[in-house]
Image 1: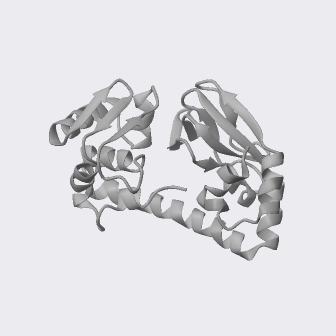
Image 2: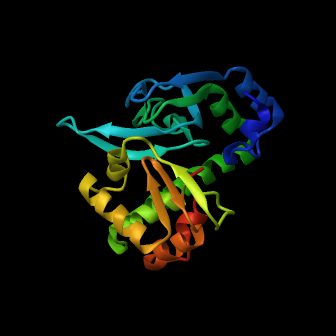
Image 3: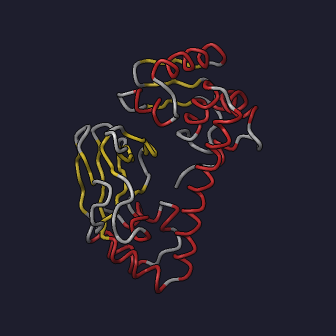
Length: 237
């Protein structure tokens, strides 16, 4: 694992070289097959993870055995670090939603760095606050947006922030997972995606979605939002 790769992530931009070198030296690269469990909720947490390539599903199981999907994360996202604030146990389960490559890092140096480096502690709090804003935004969307707009916002979060032109997105193979993430039934998701295709320049080929214009998608999806283009401007770290 390269120190430069770590530093490119928002969480580590203020971290010093000694800390990043420690993480890089203790990193483990993991290749996970689709549906491979990475960790379970309430497992003792000793490591956190960075997705190099692929998708990871975060979820909890209900009493009746159903799954409540918390999030699905793609390349570049970090998860598992919040276990530090949950009695050193994972607050959710994590499973590969596609063939996925991960890097795992020990949590102990992360805790030590938070205690000794106020700037890094602020970065971590900012990252957590950023994710909370995303969750608050989704609650707003479920009230104000129709189903096609909610799908559009989900797609916007997967596009490069600086790019308002064409974009290509590769979703997990199982679209029912995306439907669950958005709080929809699979049939509702399919109908809503068809409506979105009819409304803007969007092409769907299996699990690949080609967006003709990110600006057009943002204009369509964010018309019911409380701020302009929030999904494209507010991305999870």
